[in-house]
Length: 192
Image (cartoon, rainbow, N blue to C red; front, side):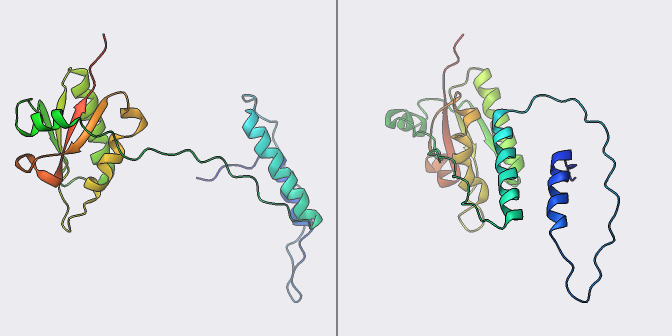
């Protein structure tokens, strides 16, 4: 769905359109009457970033019409993104592998698409955390070539901002629990 142009954008486009000439041998479009503009609908005041962006666009368009080339806008500062969740503590990992600490719930993501798997995983972890569970097993599978989509993206999903307050640590599971195709996920304690 296309968005409608604002009156300011229409005015700027009309400025640009006046500078364009038809190629030789081709008839240009016939001039048409200016579009009828309805009264503007009242809306929220623009945010400062929207106003700055609109001003930058006006400056670029004015420079384009004048034939001047402006330098590109500055790039926003790139923040380091966390793509891997914290690993499980070694002693906790050993207790889970040896089944001394119980794995209180399991979810199997085999056969799901990436979007569905992500949604189900996040809902499952929120539910487990709400029930007060402390350790769960997430079976991702290895994929047909050993590099499955769910297996590749699960650590990134577990490190996402919306699970940061729930997930305490993640490690690959022991062979008896699925090995490389499964993950132990330790959940943080709920604070009352």
